Each structure stands twice: as structure tokens, then as C-alpha cells.
Amino acid sequence: MAMFSAEILSVGNELLSGITINTNAHWISKKITEAGGFVKRITVIRDDINEISLVVKESLARKPNWLLISGGLGPTYDDKTLQGVGFGLGVELVLDNTAVEMLRKSYAQRSVNYELNEIRLKMARIPMGSIPIQNPVGNAPSVLIDTGETKIVCLPGVPKEMEAIFLENILPQIKKIIGNFHTSESSYEIIGVSEAMLAPTLSKIVETNPPDLIYLKTHPQGYTSDNIPRLRVQILSKGKDKSEVEKRYKTISNMLVEEIHRLGGKIL
Image (cartoon, rainbow, N blue to C red):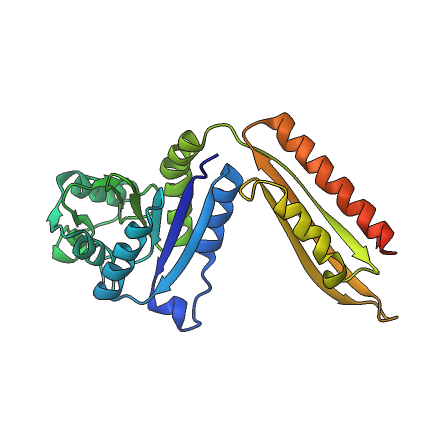
């Protein structure tokens, strides 16, 4: 099964200075994974046209289904995402009439006294050939670009704006591409078994199952007061056929439980 793949590009000096935590990338990754997709890479860069351009070109060379970019769509001097994307694609920015009307609608909905001066119109200058998307909770429109093999969407950096646009416009498109998708998942809390002890069994499971359809991860939890290791094991089976997903999950779960007991561990 060919997996839907995505890359995320987060733009903003504040994300690299420690001022702001990159919650947008975490949230987008979770939504794509829940829908059945796979996030291949997350890149964080400064508000720099050349950097944005370079990362866009590198991403397109890897041919993900989608490149999701957040941040840098506002009216200020350091909002450079659309310029960088345009530069990377080799297309000019143009004042888009639809984007202008979206700005008017956004300001009108908030009863804001405004003048569409050059500063505000900056948010309506988008790469030629791209499609603006109405921002339902903010001002700057999002921008959708179809390059043929990869779709690029530029989302606002403000979390509530990004989330609203993603849920209303982007996620439905992604789900349509992925189609039906099912998961079976659980986590076991274990004492008496370490990562190293369980590693051979995990390797065997991974080697005998399609890599895109399972996810196994051990999370060390330290030690008890008696110096006994604590471990959490996450099991995830996924795919388009519900019965196969559940059958795979039960097989893996039974193997792990059997091995944990054989090693003298205890499942809490």
C-alpha cells in the first residue's frame, strides 16, 4: 500500500530562538497520522526568503504528496513565506482579486475599521497560479499551490487560524486521497523487563510485518524504588482492511505478552 506522505515546513525566527514552541507541527502531524498518512520530515527555518526557497525546492525533489507550510503570511516586514515560495517555484507574486475580497470579508466580519493600504494588501499578493483560501478566524488567506506531484499549502502561523483552515479545507482533501483507514492501538505498562531484553522480539515483529502498517515503540520509564526497570510499549496496527488490521494487532500483542511473561516481566 502506497502511503500518503507529507512534509511540514515551519517558518519563524521565534521558533528557533526558544520564544515560541512549535505546536503547529505537532498538531498537524497528529492529524495526518490519525487520518492514515505519514509525516516524513519537519523542517524549521528562519524568516528568510532564500532559506524558504531552498527548503521548498528540496522538498519538491523528494516528492511528498503534500508540503504544509505554517507561518509568515502576515502584513509585517518579516512575513516572507509567500515570497520565498514564489522564488522557489520560479513564479512572481501577483495581487489576487479573490484574495483581496477575502481580506475585505475578514475585516467586515470583525467590524474592523480598516483601509486596504499596501501593508494589508501584502497578504493578498500570492504566487501566480495559486488558489487563496478564506481565513475564517483571522485575516491572511491561506494559499494552495498544485505543482503536479506535490500540493503546497501555506497556512497562518497563529494556531487557531491554522487549525481552522486545516480542518475545514485541507484535512478533507487529505482524507479523500487516503480513503478508508483503520487503526488498532494500545500501550502496555511493564515492570521487570528492559528495552534491551525486549529488543530481539520487537525486531522480529518489525521484520515480519509490512513496515508501513505497524508501529512499535518502547518508552523507558525509569526504575522502581527496588531498581526494577519500568517500560511502556506502544503497539499500533493500521491499514485499509479493518479485519486485517485487527488480526495483525492481536498477533503482535500476543507475541509481546508471551515474551514479557517469559522474561519474568509483569504487565500492570
